[in-house]
Length: 409
Image (cartoon, rainbow, N blue to C red):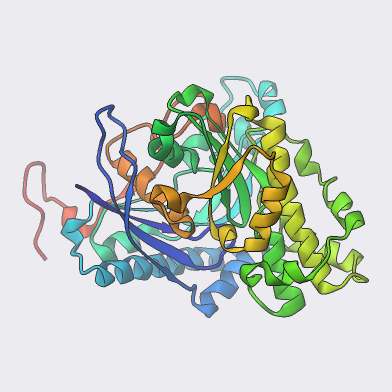
């Protein structure tokens, strides 16, 4: 059975997860549910992380960003190689590595303006909007050369080209992993939180961002406590939710957008969180963290009850992502959800919650290598199915001419 590696560093920017999965094609021509075999996490080197954070804030020159693109590729390559060495695997035993790259910028579509663009004016779709765009860094050629394995990366542009959000990207894995369960709702709590309505009928699937996940909580912990996150939600548990601040947060214009919708750091990132903290400096630090945590839980439940059709039929929400490790956030989310819904972990279905996003990229890459449609137009808004991801081949695949064996060193 083919092996695939997935690499992920998401909007939380809390390290690179590397996973090894076993996956094959099922009888219906679609991949089977990936079988998780191993995973590891490596921190971004401090000198590189500081540059990425500057890129988030648009504080790098184009020359510096270009160099960072290659440096990030080398960090991803080391993470993949670390997993290969840990599992004592050779390059010939792995079918593909999937990695999207570190998202630096993401601009969602303005769908209400699509009709303003003439069908034959492709340039106008992006020159002044309204089509989506984004930038990921992490040069894949370095990964392919270092690991000697084909790499599929940068999955979003092919969906953008067809008018799709390409964020979130979890819906294809959820189709693959849960189509045998009927209509199923999944929740991923990364830096940004998103939900997916999975179904064996891809035409009824949905996927969209609910709002902040860990991003505001993590920022508050960094600024107020000098910590990267709130371990197990203990700080939030020690605080009290400030009703007035919560009501203010709930007026964010993001919540006026309808699915499919995407959020990014420009919506709920450092500048927004800092402004909120500055305006409410009279509050205790733990109360701010508690309120940010309740805000995430509220926004998740709001999205589910407002937008999921036949929501009364959904009895379980399968959760994953770093937020699953925050027991206070999970408890608040359970309180906000309709009482008939159970909040479960993806681990109950064989996919460890902390590694699900990396498993996602392994699955997307496996499908792309076989030219399978790995987007869900009904969920992301693309005009048709497509193969997401760009393939980079390692040096050992180079041939002198058609039909000739690979060149030796």
